[in-house]
Amino acid sequence: MEAAATAQPRADVGRNLHAAERCVRLAARVVDAPIALFVSTGGPHPGPVLSHGAPSGWAAGWERTLAARLRARLADAGASVVEEHAAELLPIPVACAAVPVCGPSGRVVGVLAALDPRTRGWPAAAAELLREVAALAGASLG
Picture 1: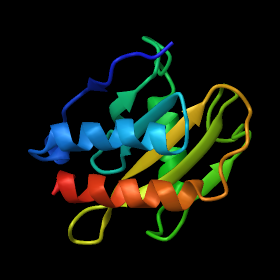
Picture 2 (picture 1 turned 30 degrees about the vertical axis):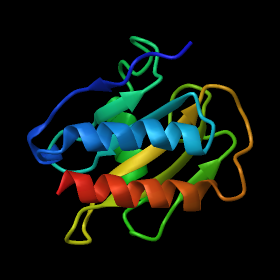
Picture 3 (picture 1 turned 45 degrees about the horizontal axis):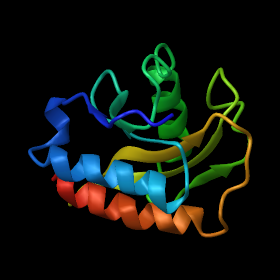
């Protein structure tokens, strides 16, 4: 059940929304995840900016919770989250692999996350693969 990528533009996303949207889709593919999203960590109300594969309404209600928890865990540009069951991140069972997205200045501007509503293991290189895609996303958000 794959939903189309949806964009919810915000002022801090920049002018290359299409390129960033493609990065979100690519993130889902490289780690074989049914859902991927970019969560902005900037502004007073961080939340999902771009998503791919999330069924309609699936994200309703937990966007700010996820953004705040990932922002706290991924404040360092070298950090990553790769968990088979990320119960402390969301109020629903989910496997999560996430890395920070840095803008051209090197400042963390968001989080790129791959999610799976099933508990599952991630490829050993999941964080590194997501970091590569996050670098592309960060460059496109400039």
